[in-house]
Length: 240
Image 1 (cartoon, rainbow, N blue to C red):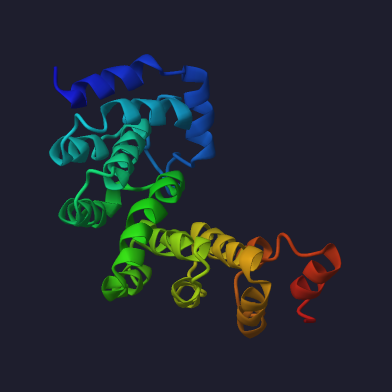
Image 2: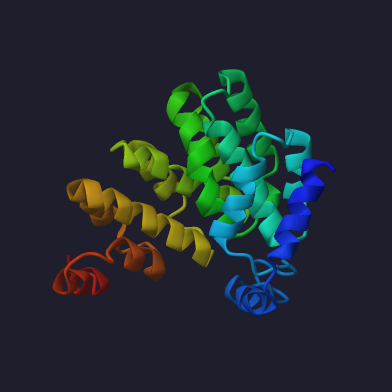
C-alpha cells in the first residue's frame, strides 16, 4: 500500500465526530466565512503529528502534494507536518530544502487556515529565508499578495527571525500589513509585535509609538496584551 493511502486510512481511523463539529465552528467553515467548506475529522494536532512522524521518510513530495490538496483539514495539516519533518531531517540536503521551500510557496492557497499557517510557515519559510537572506524579498512579495494566507505566512514566518532576536524583517512586514482589513492579519501582526516585545520591549514600543494610533484595534490589543493594565489603557485611549 502507498504511504499516501496509509496516512489517509490512519487519520480517518482517529476521527471524532463531536470534536469535528466543534472545530468546524471554531475555524469558521460556514458560508461566507474565511474557511468556508473546510472539512474536519476531529483529529488532534498531537495525533496528526504522530502520523506525520511515522511516515515522513516514506512519502514523496508528489504524494505530499496530493495530501495537501485534500478537502480534509487534518490531511492538509499532516502534509505540512510531513514537510517540516523532511525539511528538518539531518539527511536533507540544501537542494532538497530548496525544493521543499519552493513546494510550500507554490501551494499556499492550500495552506488555507490560520492553524496551518501558524504551525508550518516559520518552520519552513522562516527557516529557509533565515539561512538564505539573499531571498528575503520573498517576504515582501508575500506581504503584498492579494491572498489572505500569503500575508499571514509572511508575518508568522518572521517568528523564526524574532526567536533569534532579529526584528527588521518582522517590522517591515508589519508595516506593510498595518492597513490590511482582515482580522486574521490584525491578530498575526499584533502577535509578532508582542513576540518582539518579549525579547526587546524598546523595539516594540518604538514601532508602536509611530503606528499605534493608526493600527486596527485588534492588532493593538494583541501587541500590548502583556503590558501592565495601566499602560495598556494609555495606548487604547491614545494618550501615550
